[in-house]
Amino acid sequence: MAKKHEITPRQRMFVEYYIQNGMNGTQAAISAGYSKKTAQTQASWLLSNPYVKPEVEKRINELLSETQAMTLKWLRQVMAIAEYDPRKSASWGPAGVDAIDSEGIDDNTAMAIQEISSSTSESGVSVKIKSYDKTKALDLLAKYIGIIGDGVSKEQQEQNGVDQLSPAERRERILELNRKLNG
Image 1 (spheres, rainbow, N blue to C red):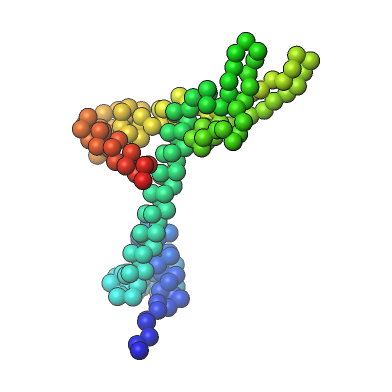
Image 2: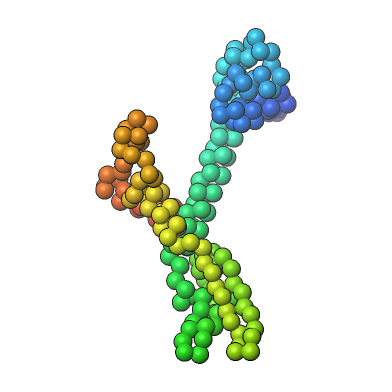
């Protein structure tokens, strides 16, 4: 049975430096210990090497997966804050404010709460529930979805090659985000 070829420690270093250096092969080769004179040639050879190339692709895919997972986690948190309804964490009336038991709070409500505190005085127990900034969360979502700009003028957008989303593109982006968030 043929033994699977493994990349060398220096080649593995090249892969890691390649990712860290923003996919700059020459700089990655130098950082991995290859000669400055031959770094460009070595990088080209390494990136086409049948054992190194799959490792580079694997690391890029891992990073993309991690980035996508972090983006979805961020988006869930921002959406939880934007959709926060204080009635899900407390009840109030003429007798005062009562926090809902933590077991009765759903995950999205819990993600939106920044602080819960209580204090006791002669008049009774005082409950304080502070949520994260809902206005900021709504603003972030609107920018992410493309409903509003990010303070960049139309001229700056054109210079930077950034286009505003059309209503159809915006609807498609919202649908795609919903698909990703809902599994």
